[in-house]
Length: 156
Image (tube, rainbow, N blue to C red; front, side, top):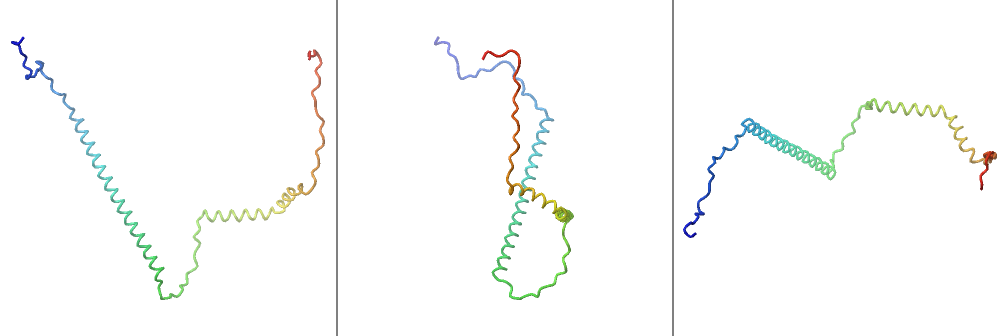
């Protein structure tokens, strides 16, 4: 056995030819690339919109801060010059149609209450009347009993 030694350094290879890896569908590959590009563009657009929104919010906060500073300055240092009161023209009614309708319905309901005031007084008097008068006992009703059955009597 010493004569037959196996060389373990050599790799065993198969004699069967290896099949080429399957070819990818070029249309699918192109579609995947197109979808990936669209997603990338959508993410970039979203980042741009988010940056614009943050800029708008920052400008709004800055504007509010400036308004507060101006109001605080006006409170601390009121103007010395006294202006003459300016006469304002009579203001026109700025009520909407819905507001006018609600006012009209209130007026109509008040008129209806005024018109029916005598009926309301009578109803209130009826409600209060039984409280002041003694309560009459209701007439006693006869107690009804079932007639006794005729026929076979029970053994009890």
